[in-house]
Length: 117
Image (cartoon, rainbow, N blue to C red; front, side, top):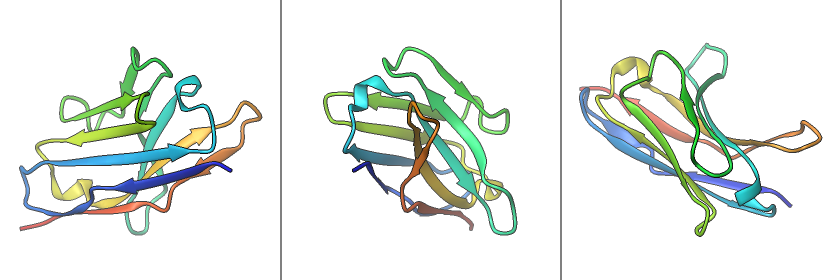
């Protein structure tokens, strides 16, 4: 079965950096695009970054462009989100996501990122 496990969240000061990881299993990782979403308290879940199966195409929400970088290591079945110049408004639970060819969404348990001084 599909399993996604996020890690790397924590408390960081404004301007700081964090690197999130998502370890995937239960499917052919190298065949699927991967996504990072986030959900802040009281807000809708929003798409933050996407990467294609080969890792050659990425796209970002306007709010994180130039600060966040999504990448993947298909040998390790892992997708990453490097977050730099963090702001308090980046505080959220961050989720890893994959969508199957039948349009079913799979989610990890999420990892909390808190940006505060």
